[in-house]
Length: 250
Ligand code: NDP
Image (cartoon, rainbow, N blue to C red; front, top):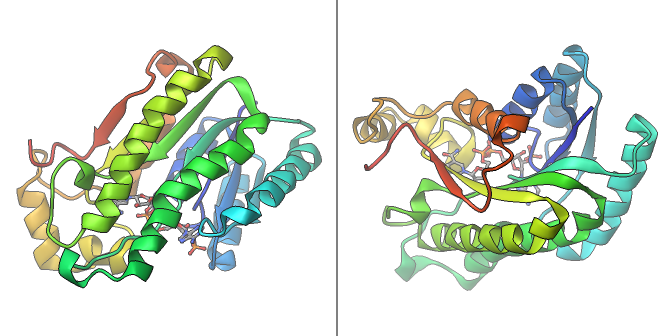
């Protein structure tokens, strides 16, 4: 049985990825930050599919805590699965930031660096010894790293960095047979950004009108794509940025 570790698996895209993978029989370690209630709910949903799951707390802004987190993962692997490694790492956790460049504070910028650049880098570093040779890594970028909406400079430039990081991961981990790819979702209806894509009719309509398939993305659009990318059939896809957006701004 394969095991995936998904950061930010308590809600939104991470939770949906977990459910799609669980339906394919993949065991899940998910992390949460503030919403233990949502994490417990997600774990119960996964277990109801007949798959083992664990939920661990993690604040991705605290890179100093990553070695201890890795120890916690190791203990869970032994306790729940009787294993010493896992197969798939998905660096998904994160929040957005909306502010024009002229109004972006140093604090907000640093938070984006910590969440979207430093965390994928150092969390992956801390977990590398626990990822099975032949395993996979998926990072999560954004359509905003390819096209530009005013107000998302700090957020989007970090996502651009994660795309570069992914190519380096693929290159350096190739000798271990580990493939690394980055998905770039378009705008998806989740709690992200205060739930604007989902709840603000004007924004929802604007995004839909710019998308070839004529609607905003839903969590299932991303969870399904991630499960497909982590399937055995997709093992030769490596070092790629894959946009999952229904064709926005083509
Ligand atoms: P949600 O707001 O729905 O969920 C965010 C998840 O990240 C939750 O599980 C949350 O945990 C966790 N999280 C938030 N802050 C931290 C932190 N400091 N440390 C650890 N975990 C944290 O967002 P989405 O699911 O929509 O977004 C997931 C990823 O997808 C992000 O990287 C985002 O940038 C990216 N993305 C999203 C798009 C969208 O339109 N939704 C578009 C493009 C990319 P908890 O539940 O405990 O709060």
